[in-house]
Length: 235
Length: 260
Image (cartoon, rainbow over the protein chains, first blue to last red):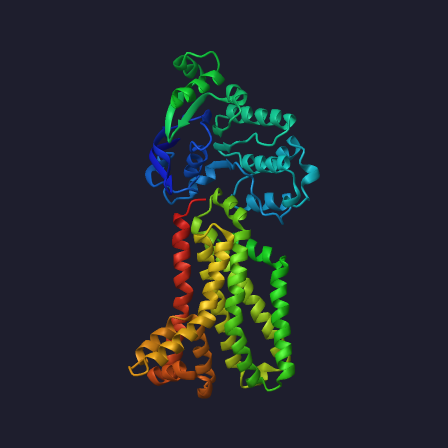
């Protein structure tokens, strides 16, 4: 479904991605792991066409995305930092984003799920971090697209919302969607993902299931496996 | 793109800045007519104000809006919309709203004073067209500068500096160079120098239309001598449209390559 071929990207003198190649499964949850600054968000933004790679090709459903935009109809994205125009109300924002796609949406169901009803008529600038993240989640999930990309979806969420988010993701997975997640919360990774991709120093260091990672690093759990990779790198 | 344009115009109708400019122009129009009941003289005074102020307002508002709508743009980039539609929609939204403030703000007082019954109606409409062109030009330039600079202060600084350059410094440099090189034939140099400054160009455009040779100044007189009134009008108008499209072209081109 998603294919990255030899992607290079540098910001000034900083080489963030040095020839990343990756092809996704047709469905299931893939988590992208890696230390801070390893290029997770850059990779996702390249997929969305927000960052233009210096070299390499991105293919979506077997056609290149370079300069195209129609493919984003099948893509839902939750950005890492929820940036919204401050002077809009939550309900106005949802209405506005809905206008850009001719699709039936399911925001009512999501608004109830995350208890956002009391906040609908508030201005986005006045919302707390966690509430903004909930708005972010609603915007990302309301279109019911076949591919969902979540960049740090858990940031700022309270435990109740976290449980609901996990339920939501599980439900989407059952529908046969492809879900790409970046996160630093390893319990979340262990619970949710079918496959992990480990980014290190601008390359994919490991791709496979959690079991494979544990076996290849000879560690008992995910946390230790990742720690051992990073230590090895430093040594 | 129409959806984005629609949204931005809607957003701007709620912004107090649009009303601020509208009332400012309104006050200016009434003030001018109150002090100067002769319509054709009022048109000339208005011209002097418009050719300096519309670029300044276009610049300030352009930069402010561009940086304030950064979040909005990032939100839209992840939606199935063409990149150039987002930026073109934004540009047109701001330029059209500002032009509307100008046309309505200046238009209403002159309308009440009976501009439609006077002979100056075409000169007046020409002046409004001139102000609109300058608005489009300077919104385009300030958008381009803002897109190139992630730092708001820098973007603001460069944009204001450029306005100052075109509105004030350019003429000074031009005059100095005319005096320094007075022994040489400077016709072509002056013509080119005028064409390269949209503010000078729009001043000449209106003066040619008003047909007041006393106010044309050196470059204007040269323009008239060189091209004649009609060809001069066509050429200056064409150059002004080029000035609209040039910065817009660079803005859209850069927007396609930029990382967000």
